[in-house]
Amino acid sequence: MMLRRLLPAAALCLLGVQPALANERHFTQSYETATLAPGVVELEPWATARLGRDGYYTGIDNRLEFEVGLTDRLQTSMYVNWGVEGVRNPLTKGIDTTANHRGVSSEWKLRLSDSVADPVGSALYLEFTLGPEEVEIEGKVLVDKRSGPWNVAVNGIYEFEHNYAESIEEHKLQATAAVGYFLADHLSVGLEAMDFNVVEPQVPGGSATLLHGAIYAGPVLSYGLGNWWVAASVTPQLYGYGKAVVPGRGLDLQDFERVQARVLMGVHL
Image 1 (tube, rainbow, N blue to C red):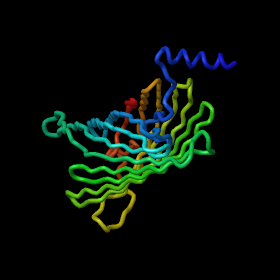
Image 2: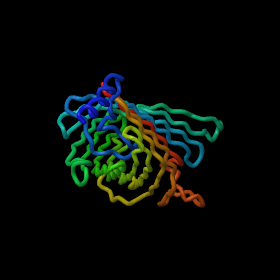
Image 3: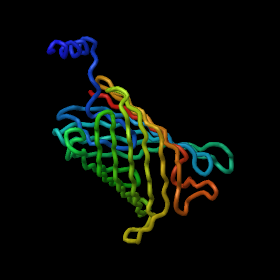
Image 4: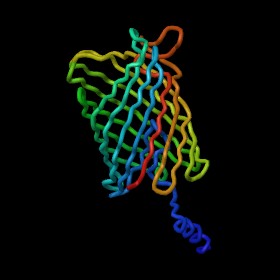
């Protein structure tokens, strides 16, 4: 019996193949509670496409992230953010593109309980971003559970943005939920949903009211093997609410897009 257990492991080593990483991402919008082992470093490039508003619009957001495991429960990361946007010019009818640098960010994640060993996994997440014109602070409460082939994750999110160039504040309340099914140890498919809410921009100290929001949902696919993994999703906007909803369409196309698509991957260095 011992020989039966050792032979598959030895074969994997000879082939240079390792099981999927324990901390790999299986969803693109919903964070799970797993953290990197102490001393492990991971490189994560991201790309998010945001397509279609009230008129032609294309946005591509990019992120390059370096994650480091500090303890068996705590990890941190630093990353840079940049992107490009394209909108139709009403005068020339052409497409005007704008490239921008969106600053640098620092992320911290503290795992409180394990999604497999404990009844439910839980973690706290905090992110700081400093850009050319604004500063952002984002906090998340992460909950997930892995049971057999099923994987579930739920995030509650609060984001504060302060544009110091114009002295304007904005608050965002968000929630994500995802469910995945492992077709194999290294391959999972699932469904992911997001609810984004924008609280009306205001001068510091003013009152806040809900301005508008949108709900997205769509399929997600992930694959991980050896020292790398990749996850991809496509999430169309299903419903918009608030005063920014386009009449007759039921969608919020002022601050939100018709479709979001995201690809992210991780490689252990």
